[in-house]
Image 1: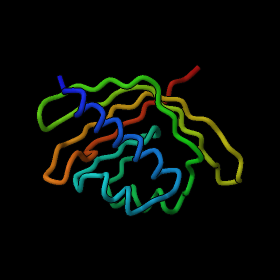
Image 2 (image 1 turned 180 degrees about the horizontal axis):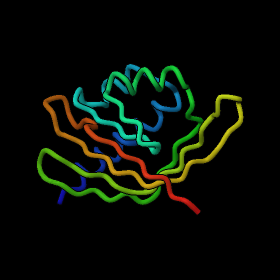
Image 3 (image 1 turned 90 degrees about the vertical axis):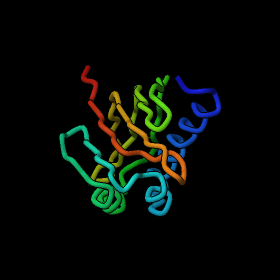
Length: 126
């Protein structure tokens, strides 16, 4: 279990990630993601940190990212964050769509603070 201060820090980091995706803030995403990041998209596509940041910069697809109740568990230097997500996405033709899913994220405590090391989104089908 984490103390309340650590839980708040992890949730704040997730909020920063959401805002950076929408703003396409490459510098912020670079700071949030660990160099060893493995990001598994809902389609099964797997990206490294560099590939993911390039993908986000190219696609510029996030209109909004909403999270529901999140669960945090782990140890002193690793945390697992799980919970629902709703991505409001811009499609290639300019339309918008919603993607509802469940996300598992792993964070590692580094000398410069917590960083995301793993992300996997599973789409929730109706």
